[in-house]
Length: 416
Image (cartoon, rainbow, N blue to C red; front, side):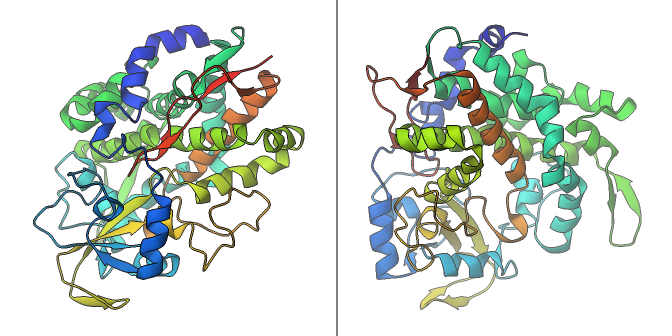
């Protein structure tokens, strides 16, 4: 299928609805937030490592938002802004749990996936799919889905001399990659993305694929899940139930289609806004890796995640009662001057250090190597195929927006 037909099959208007952060679909997580939150986060971090309240309230947004650990209005909420403090939390899942309670293995929801598991149970479930996401497996993703998708999309606008990369490119790559790895046809990819807030609809679309892969496995991710065997506490093994597969699938679909496109847009925009740097990366592709890693540090697309306090504890001078929710401001931690000099600068020459762009600890993002591969292959293809790529001076320039989902508005470019 050509890039033009692939984009048409998805539907550009539907892509814009689902992937424009300012749309009502994304406003529930603060996608319409247009200020720069970093000056406020710096000031908060300088005053104290821990503050009472949610990140968005402390930043000046006084309306309910939904994201991990939100809204839970009946719980005390605290927010943490320093790198070292976040590192402590990620390393102590006994006190700072990923789950607010026991998960239900018979329920099909992201909340009942390994995202909400800790300890041995989390390790067992993660180990089932971890081999499909290790760095050595990146080429499997590139060959089977990423490369094909990237070049088909560029085919759709390469002859036009201009494009809007957020819709025409960035938004489509991850959703087509992850749904493709599940055996979902291109024309249903956005149906899956749109239905993620209604798990029953996603299950209905995946059920025939799961049934078919149980009978006849193929070289895809659904087959990995249907053939995986989980060892119980007593040493016996069993195949995953349909409910467990659907919970896995919902988590992977939600993460795989909902984050990488924003981070890719952030990285592309950071380079386009610095033409000399873009030119240097084009001439020396070894600079692309530090350019991507620096964008991940400088502006992570999901700058907050949450943990649940399991027992009363004193943390950096603040008492956290059992049952409270602690919000980890990754965006602030990634610009902590105690760890990075000139942290507000986008500088690809700085010595690379681990950041929290993909979280940390046992729950570090499962798909981070796939995400890096998507961003790298995508940018390399743009540079290879679109000579003299630059921002369109006649269009509104991209702006960074969003509270709990950071990204850019449009990325209008011209080339040739």
